[in-house]
Image 1 (cartoon, helix red, strand yellow):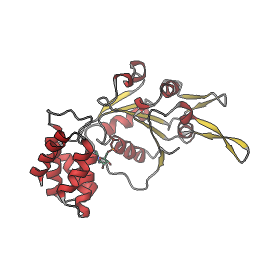
Image 2: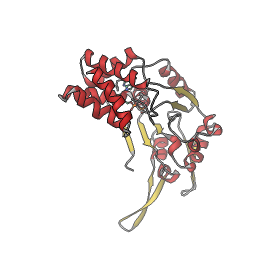
Image 3: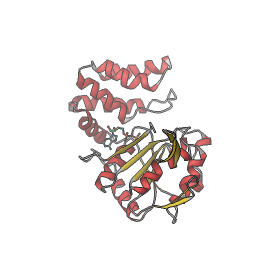
Length: 266
Ligand code: ADP
């Protein structure tokens, strides 16, 4: 599957905590309670999961869900190989068999049958029914299910149902406060403190714009991209225009408003 990654990095991924999230995840893991991470895109949710999987010494399997992600993508399927039909485990099955952290990113984007599939994994049963094999797989205590959800982004149709939400405990994420975002941008891009400060203050101004409706606001990820391009030698204005303004909108007026802020920054 293209949108699947299995990661077990040697060095601990860099993650600057925003609050008590590390301790919440650690206790949820010990108590075998699944975790829902809420928050806008690019604010550090995936990085947090990577860091914690590393810290708790578990492999991490991440699935980026989209509207085509179905239960059989996650459980597994029969494939024809050289004239023979062979079963291939999907990411959920593999995560259970290997006692991994399973991170379903943007769960609300996936098809309805994915939600049904995870129900038995999220209650006391902690098991997966593989209908095609007529098998029930029990999750070991090391297995943990984590899902992310972006409350502002999904349409009303794609809201998570209360009956699904109530199977998780939930952690709220947001863009880091100014001082923390400056530290993150410096650590991620190796840019100077001056550049990081300018970019992060610029991001604050952009996030405060009220006249235009952006689908998503400027994320820490975009600020890190701009900083990396600047470190690489691109002019700060061009770097910021391509990494931030152009990504955020196609509307000429809104673009001009963003670029005004860019010109005041660099
Ligand atoms: P999300 O999963 O919320 O969409 P990511 O975890 O991929 O976002 O974060 C996007 C980028 O922002 C990361 O690659 C990292 O560079 C940076 N980032 C955001 N928050 C943090 C943080 N608290 N600590 C370290 N890096 C962060």
